Image (tube, rainbow, N blue to C red; front, side, top):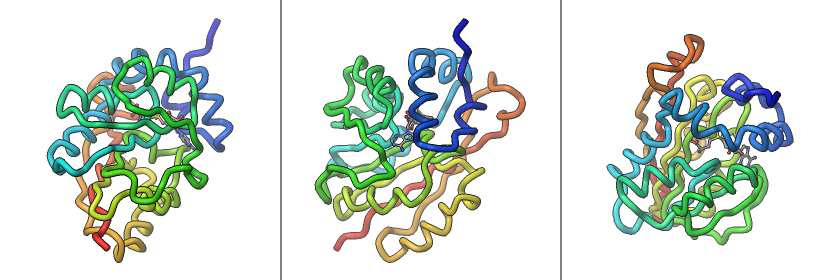
Length: 212
Ligand SMILES: C[S@@+](CC[C@H](N)C(=O)[O-])C[C@H]1O[C@@H](n2cnc3c(N)ncnc32)[C@H](O)[C@@H]1O
């Protein structure tokens, strides 16, 4: 019998290898057993805020930790734009590819320097990737490098890691390079999630890279 994967496993990840191993197994059931069943809201929240805050020059978009492509799917429905996906898991990216919403799919470790030119993207978006067991705030430096001056940055950060893993401090340290962040705290899941995670919240964090 195949063991079912879920939030408990995701929040307990300790290393990049753990992440690769988990998403390899979880990829095929992620959309149905996790996202749909729990009314996972982060991709639609990020999409709604992108549509609210963006202008026509905020393209192309990079979806960071794109996974199975839920942000790309939401965006296509709500306000279609050119969007690329980046993720370390080839199995998650295979699912994202099958949805035909991304122009390019990039398999890469976000914790390393990316093979992407500076100032290439008009926007960086991300849902569910800055959370327990996943990616910390150090990655923001590289994401800002590949973002155009004036480009839009919209990511969810789980409230449980916002201070504890240094996101708040990172945003403070970056203040010379970015506009004052706007924070929208929202529920990560709908009513069906188990009691333990019923109050999980993410902070949709919105800012722009300063013009030079
Ligand atoms: C919780 S999933 C979120 C997927 C999608 N954004 C969503 O909201 O459904 C986190 C994703 O981050 C990716 N990830 C974790 N560590 C990574 C790393 N070091 N580099 C690139 N992607 C990573 C995983 O492979 C996974 O697809």
